[in-house]
Length: 151
Image 1 (tube, helix red, strand yellow):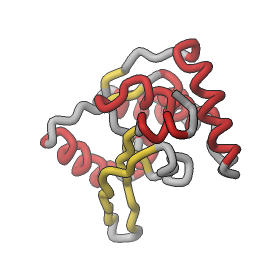
Image 2: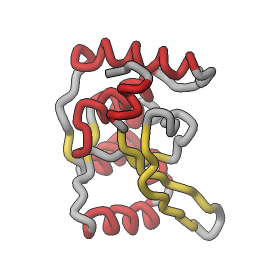
Image 3: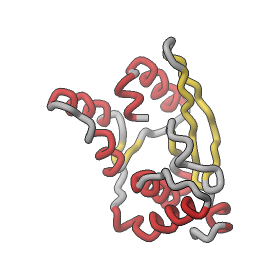
Image 4: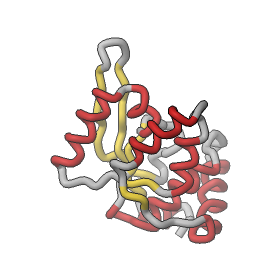
């Protein structure tokens, strides 16, 4: 969502307003910040990206908090022949598991948050006049995780 926001600022502003009106807080954690800032190609671009991050709340979450979950989540993807999820995606899944019903993921990356583990609770289409994007909101499902022995 952050990368989209950087490229489509008007649409991103509308999305943020929609979420804030729904009493949502916008949040990230350090690995998401890394993913977003790593493609900054000069200091000015990096500063613009950091300014966008200022709209969000940084939540504490460290690799040590998620190490066991990340492996279990990655193994559950592999067992279903869904090997495309990155370490960052597995880390995000662990973050969602840790915070339970209090956190929802907004992403355009649908294939790495499959419904065998997540509930897709809302779809938000975004029309940029050039392209149409589909943002989906996902929640980690504890019952599904228990069935596949991640819990």
